Amino acid sequence: MTADADALLIERIKRGDQKAFDLLVIKYQRKIERLIARMVRDTDLIQDIAQETFIRAYRALPQFRGDSAFYTWLYRIAVNTAKKSLVELKRDPLVTETARMSADDEDETSRVENELTDGETPDAVLASKEVAATVNAAIEALSDDLRQAITLREIEGLSYEEIAEVMNCPIGTVRSRIFRAREAIAQRLRPLLDTPDGKRW
Image (tube, rainbow, N blue to C red; front, side, top):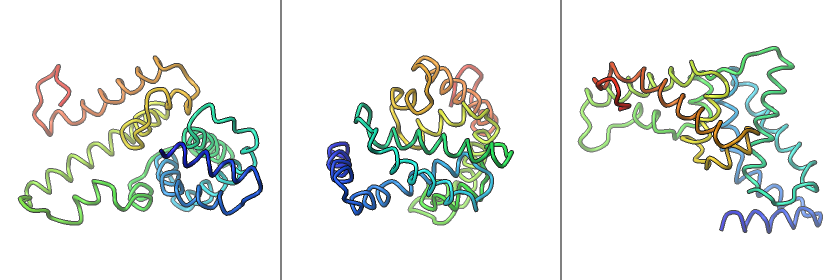
């Protein structure tokens, strides 16, 4: 349904309807900013890179053939735009807590930090915060490729096929990167969760 709606909007854009592109921006801006926030250190850059992503997408839209979902195509442009910006600024693509929280205020970790739901004790919330912080630190410590793969899979919900397209690599490589990322995160979590070696969680 979403893909069909996107396709209709893209047809309208190709016929010169700029308002249709505004609808796509509104629909995907938050997701794109959240993705970029997990790649860059400087929160001031997030909106600029997102804006550049949409400008590039708009210019490239006449070449979009619909072979993949629009958002997969858009994610790839966002990743490439972020990488290009970081190279130009000679900065490393690192995640920061500030960037993450400002880009996604409704993320699960911030929900845990900001409210108690029924049945949650302060100790349970503290434990949840510790687990969330450990996961975030583990993700931050990953190499760029592993972090990008696990972010696209676990946070953005892309399929292995879509991630392979965004990252421009074989599906087998995507599976390997996600496996290695999960193992690295699990290694950090084991002391907190008292999990025996050989079991992930």
